[in-house]
Image (cartoon, rainbow, N blue to C red; front, side, top):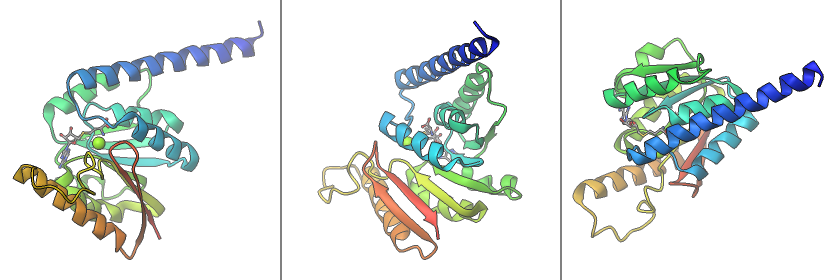
Length: 213
Ligand code: SAH
Ligand code: MG
């Protein structure tokens, strides 16, 4: 066997173990009922990142680090990710420490509504919003000034289990109806935003892609 063959095989083994680690994190998150992105949404994001190769990504809503880790793995984009829940943040930290990589993933333990000044000198090619649905518009307005030229914002859970497009919401609790209304108004906001071209996909729990014009 040549040296090259050994190196190629090492790389395959390494990738396999990284995928095993990501799969373990996924399984644990599902068992703990952590609302991680659905498989379809993950594939969409990975494909998007593979095609566009964003150098820097900002994520709002780390949870246990699952999406930050798989996004980082596509092409080693540098990731900044914000989480306000201490338990989630600690688990994400622990998950990151288990990985043989991850130097490019920066965890920020803060409410995203208060973290923008920490990042004021940075620009991002992709902003991934996956946190409290009632605040999507605030996150969007707060963080889009940090987008690089030609940058993109991707949001998860835009369908909210199909409720956003369903007008028959009588049976829902007040708080769920409130969230549905917020997401509906955020959708209209994106559609009529003069600086962004937005496409909605019924993928996973609904994904929007807003490209800066
Ligand atoms: N992106 C993750 C899932 C995130 S779940 C994945 O797919 O792997 C949403 C997370 O957003 C929760 O952990 C919640 O604590 C966090 N969150 C909600 N609102 C937030 C806010 N205002 N600032 C920071 N984190 C927030
Ligand atoms: Mg989500």
